[in-house]
Image (tube, rainbow, N blue to C red; front, side):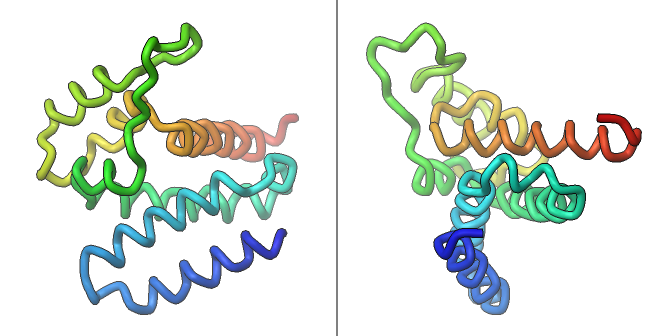
Length: 147
């Protein structure tokens, strides 16, 4: 684990201790949590214990993210505005904003968290979702006992 990742975990733990202090702590928890998942080396996630702990951690991050509103999410992870939209990008600024507005900018994301993540044009959140899906696949392999 790199010193940057260790520092992010330390900050995350400190924020957990201060959690009752308000919404800004929740935003910081989500931001740090996403950064921890994004910066974790893919090969490091292949170890069984690491896979299980990172999956549990990522679930915690998603649960915190569900408490945010789309407006808070935009503040943390600005929507990428690529013009013209590269052909490899499945979503763009307009489709992201359409999705966020449909759910309400000041309504907690709640159970819509994955709908929003799949439609969100931000490189960090795309990588976060990708790693989350990878962890899910690795857990299935571990559970099934296959490679």
